[in-house]
Length: 537
Image (cartoon, rainbow, N blue to C red):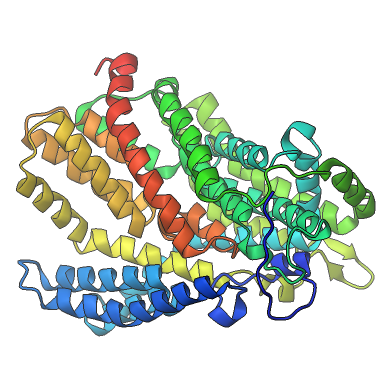
């Protein structure tokens, strides 16, 4: 059992609950509790980035490349923004906004075209989900969920089992519910679990009185398992994540081969299972929890549950809003299982019950369900909603902008076709490796949906030009599009957990690199075998 002994700045006892409720994702050095070594590293990283980002942009823009002007400038700006995101000389959302500003100032696209993708329904999913999470944290619903999970002796006694159990719940849910929705609905419970662990460590004097609960390694492991587990679980079914449907549709159009629901699950199950094992092992290895066993957790949880008292009206209202939102998120998946994804009913339901619209409608209920009608008090006030992490919403919005521009300017297609020509790809294996690497790289800087929409149409003609059936490379690209793990903008679920303030960008990158490589290897080695066994293609 290790002890965190970090010199504090205030000398006062940390209010753990307040720290999680008011956590800021993008904190300056003065707002964090850092050891001297950590402070030196952070200062160096941010200082380097301040000068490296503009240097990379200018040098790349001046290179004599045979590219259209808009593609050349977009690539230069995107490289500079990636440096800003990795080194954090400015808050990460500001880095994205600087990039968007430069796109317009340098004439890559007009201003209206640049900011148009901010209207994506994914942005509305973030807003609605964050407001629901704010209510769950404010009224203690998340804490009740956390206590329920921790009260199970086989789970609650071990921090590793807590992380693994939570990852399994996430992966199974995300197989049928949108990855974004799954992470959004489970995030408050994850924060609740982490706050319970942090308070237990504090009460047992395993940490300094003024420790920073947002910097616990067990928190990093739990949050990254939430995000990565959703990405892995989303591959299990065709409706688990949008890239699956995009890739399946494009493959069917190009080859005439349709992948049934059960066939997809049989192909994906071994890959998902092995990837989950790798997630659990590597995350717990790289982010070794401060304590292995949560001694006395059962007694502690029972005591805390007793103090919570009966369920309040505010909690009931929050559960009603949350339950209706989740039910509407799940409903299209139920239709897909019963009527199929090609049915008119599924198409109509999935179009009209968009997860972003459902999220904001569900959040709106919090301002309509009263806790005291005589005083006209409702479940949530706007002052509570205004405190959600708008920075993460802006960050992912700028990521959507770059993903859209990669496709609209043709830069993604240029990268794919020129790479294929340069490498002289002529075999199924080579094209599959190329497809996986390209999909993962693009998904690191754009959403996984954008990655699938961009890469699969590139891979199919490349394979056909080489006289190869594009089925395997195209499906590999579809799977790989969900395996962007390094940056908050890679997937919505990465951005959501980054918005908790618990996961530093450096730790997300360190863990994400490992899983990018492991995911690529699993897809390249195992997917062709499963396709041969299940579909005989």
